[in-house]
Length: 331
Image 1 (tube, rainbow, N blue to C red):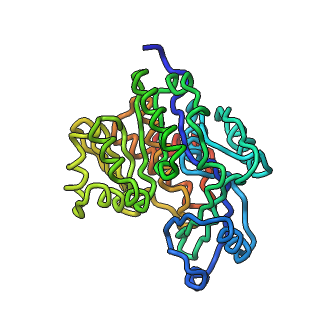
Image 2: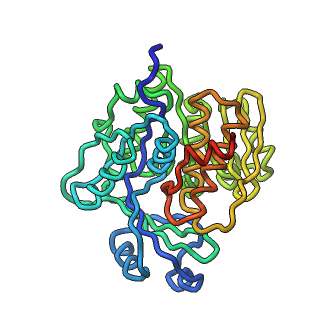
């Protein structure tokens, strides 16, 4: 097998995040599910945008955030995702390419517009996300670059994008392409609501041996396995997925890989500002270590360091120099 040109290629929602601080009473008044992610239609998106205070627009999307962290660490990355031929689509494409990530998916003409996620950040740093998927849910299989997928060490898939039919078919094709090329497939479950809708699909992929690295938080783990006990839940996947990584918020993270276990504490920070993208950046740190064949515990520590950086400020893209930060933490 030839050495890959990319460390990670990801398929995910191409979204621009619109973020604003809010009060807890605003969450209640607007009928939002605090700390969760809700899909909204164009009318609800307009209503929520009008209710926001002063906001910041930052390119986002779960898998794209992970790649931003990976690229900042020095990894070679590529992204596949659908934007519309509009202003937000140009913003997204500019931002991801400016981060050193290859992005060649053609923009889609006409409606719907580029996806956006309206994020209300409450005083405790919890983010309440309301996502209009827009053009991102119309990623066709024809937009895939099979050569690029086969030329990446890891194909990373975002569970959020499994919901719409068209990109789901594209991701199934991408999995087949990666496996035919002998590459690894990583999958992030994204949210319990995704598992509620597509858990049977995910369990089938796992049973078929299609997933090499599975990312989840402890709530998603319980939803996927139907087992409330954390250690029993992760053990139930140990002989089905080569590497299982589970984040546990302030309790750190745990992983099992080929029979080896590792656990890491959460990195201390002065104050949690915004938890948007914490899991995405944890995956970035872990995958960076994984693609460089670092020990399992070090991969977890890299994830924890990156997650701590992201929750110390608004937005899901790193602001600190991650290379310098990791060097200072790991020596």
